[in-house]
Image (cartoon, rainbow, N blue to C red; front, side, top):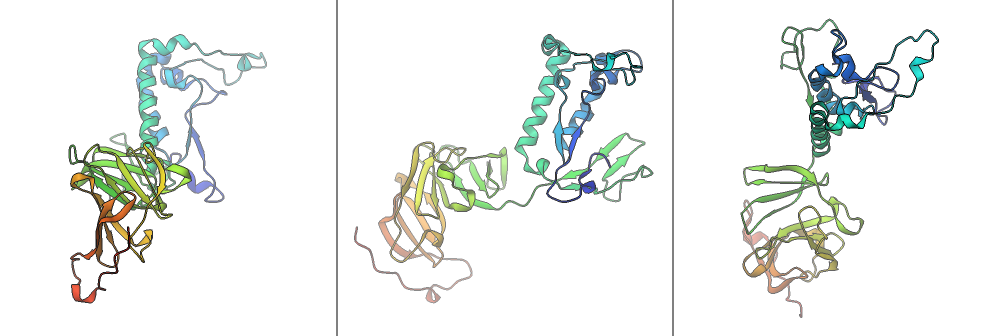
Length: 317
């Protein structure tokens, strides 16, 4: 556990440790798995928990060439001056297609995908923060090393990501949530990643999630529309917000700015409904948010209509 969470041994927080199971100075980890009974890679299954720990640790994982398919070269720790330790050992690529190689390749590909999907696995956050060799039982919360059960339990998490936009599809009523860390999930109203865990999405023109002021999905074709703080909008897919329409300008009711928008939705006939901080709502289309309906009051929980400002003058279209 202390090796797994070695971030605390670094001199400063801006440094990242590198963690690995093997390197080119030693025998392949797959060979070592069966070294005791001279079985080598035939005991490859023993490397699975070590590979899982490698890709879930708070460090940059390093994979020795061939480890991902079970290469099992033996290297003497002391060659007594014969030079055998530094001999070339080419990878035997045919092993990628034998039963051991195929299974380990799938395992490593899956672990890489999991690490890329969940930002918490790429953060420096890990609990327990430290673990001494004499500690053989889990802590009061169940975390740590249980020697008797041969079990290790630790917790990883990322930085808190806020929601910058949400939308519901017209075709199947799935809920799409877009987060400040550049990922989006797909789920239900009470479980936002029921169908898809957060995966990265892209924005057009160098924009960031912080630039988004509203997201909506068209009922007619499930295209995802996004409105930005710089007065531009785009349309695309949930993973590429500019795939169909590159950024174009949009207009708002008089006296309002993009930062006044608190929500956007697309309803029947693909009409765009926008809500503003001052308690007003408009209806229009993606590039003219009050084309069809000028600002009018909407009811907000906990507020009295009489306390809100009166509708502003209708602008000329």
